[in-house]
Length: 153
Image (cartoon, rainbow, N blue to C red; front, side, top):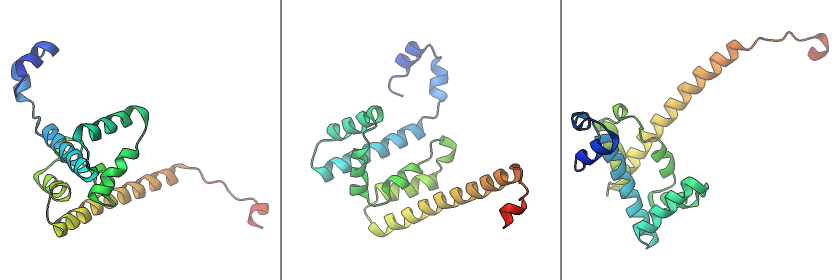
């Protein structure tokens, strides 16, 4: 890591602990973000700093319209695919990385479409299993009211 002594001094962390950190997940996520910003800028024929500033501003103001440019650049489901990018490093396997790489960085449109289908299928499977589990436990916990004669008629 380039600035580990500075980070150790600033945050009062032993250098050994910083060296042991696995920051590969962070760098991978940042590389995807950089690539997305680069491609959006190329598509809009503007500079990357302008795109990045709009994204950052939106985090604080709620102005999310610049995110539409991600879908204009990468296709209809790009934001849905991006939302599936794992936030935990243990979920970010080589296979997962490969799928996201093919979607956002791949040059072959057919491979991009296959990656999109795989990622969206995983999203749909996880949502379906969550919904079934969630609704079942909720329904079982709600006491059922007996219907009166008036409600039956």
